[in-house]
Image 1 (cartoon, helix red, strand yellow):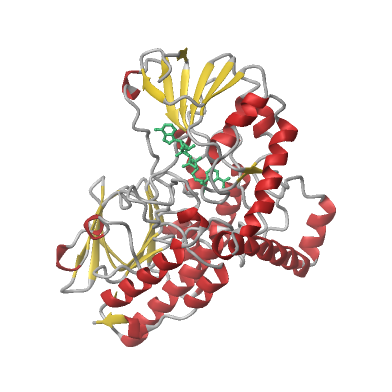
Image 2 (cartoon, protein in one colour):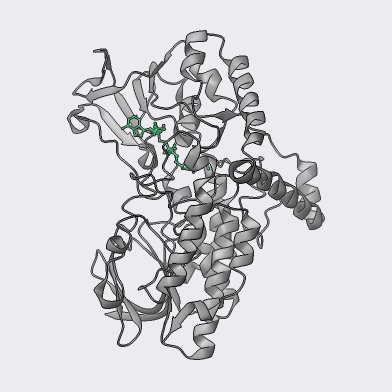
Length: 485
Ligand code: NAP
């Protein structure tokens, strides 16, 4: 059976929920949210490893229209964030709009009737005038290209596929990678495992985490005086925007923060050899700046070794490094991140004249305002190309993009148009400007490689500006930039 909708939302993470809530608020009810997992939450459902928490303050990393006065900490743990998302779905009555276990295999645009036909793995078919792709920038685990990975006889899993039932106690654990996920996992498991061998390719820049419980007095204040909570959110907002200034326009400011980070390292790591291993040799901010109070202390534990020698291969019993040293492991945890810049669409998306999205994006993903892609009419992306942030809460970008999409939905309705398609030249000019701006940022010139870039070095993930710039640009749907059919 083919079911017809006005909008299909792909993904039930923060983006999908935001799109659904705003559509509903605007009187749209004939939409469906297709989610491959059996629960909502997206990245906050999948990433449930020990220690998982947000590294942006909860009072900023939450919807502006749904403040939560009761966040327990400055930086809330994963389970609390997931509960918040569940609360949002319930409050805005989205329950009947979800289709879980719906793993899409293809989405094909039919130009004759201006509709998208979407099919799932289990053979279900849907037709919709509009698709809103909210499948997330960090939803596809990246498995390292290490020789012999498949030959390991012990237990091995990726951080985004954590096996809760597996008991790590008294095990020798190898952790590969030292990004945002690893620095949360290592302190959470270190006292439970027998040995922890941490394989580091590039040391991250780490700053202290201004974390802590939020007192009941503050919660009471936020509940009874919402303006105080808004004030707090505003303060956080501007604090983060200042970081954008450092990353994009005034890299000199980063020196202050890198000095702070080096002092923090020295305070926590007495051993000079270990400290040298943990000292970054690229400009701070080039890779995501991490925050943690317990990562360095964890590395100073007796049962931890930080290995910086390059991994040669993984074999049946453990990890062999280039210096010929073989360290056995019972468990290998792949903290190796996500495919963010490459292989962007995990299912076939075919637009006008049968063009495939991954083909169109062969040299790096591009869109207009991270939302519309030329040749793919009535398809809108949330957290699309160059909308990621190195400095603040992604919820800000999500809300801005959803606002833009709503304007497009209204325009389609009012004009009676069959579809809108961003003009190729508009998209090209927009991306030319973006890449010019990026060229001088710390992400391109900071002397590192990161998941922000494709293999060829093109940054297709980050927004090179302030969030208020993006909000301004997405406030109205400029129909003259689109071909309207
Ligand atoms: P990541 O930052 O991409 O880190 C991956 C790590 O694996 C890096 O240290 C990388 O080394 C290493 N690695 C990759 N391939 C390797 C190989 N073949 N051999 C050895 N090492 C290898 O991934 P992540 O830690 O999962 O974080 C990804 C993003 O998710 C974050 O930047 C953040 O945006 C988000 N995240 C957020 C939170 C949060 O608190 N909100 C928590 C977790 C993740 P190199 O650095 O040398 O490439």
